[in-house]
Image 1 (cartoon, rainbow, N blue to C red):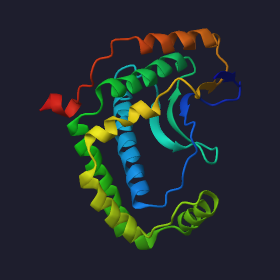
Image 2 (cartoon, rainbow, N blue to C red):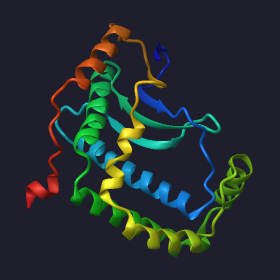
Image 3 (cartoon, rainbow, N blue to C red):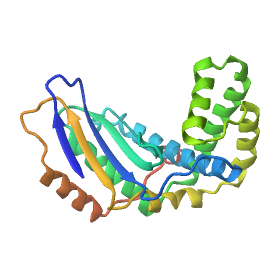
Length: 231
């Protein structure tokens, strides 16, 4: 599915690529489910660090970008989604970059330094979450119970979430995170949506299909870790 929509009142342009699962999503009810969420979360952390890095370069391909796996507004379904906010005339370049970065991870995976930094970031988040457990807003607590009612997910306590995450983290491997992209990306159930303000030259379906083909056949090189290069 490819959709292109322009609105003269739109304030910014965006690109979204989604790979929807054909299987039904299952609720999070076991420790194994929590571990799977942690693996998906670490994947997203590393991918988004790469996308954020691109926005700091001269002539960045987009204003901001993100990728993640999970629910996307249709109950009972999950998807891997890549998103970018762009200049009105920058949607095709943003799409090309999102596809290329996904392809880079599929071919070469993430690196050890990226993995270690992601784990450190996650641990820091949960330590703060645990420390401030008595300061949670009521809306967040209510939201958890609404999610439990609608989706069937468990509502673990902050203490349980913290201790379980800390116990699971050391046994998660870089190899299993790198293997995720093989299941995330697939040609079926893929949608590409462009939305934004009106432009003189409107992107076409043919241009999008050309980019898909070019990136799929491109000789993508491995990611060079900035922190490693600087040391």
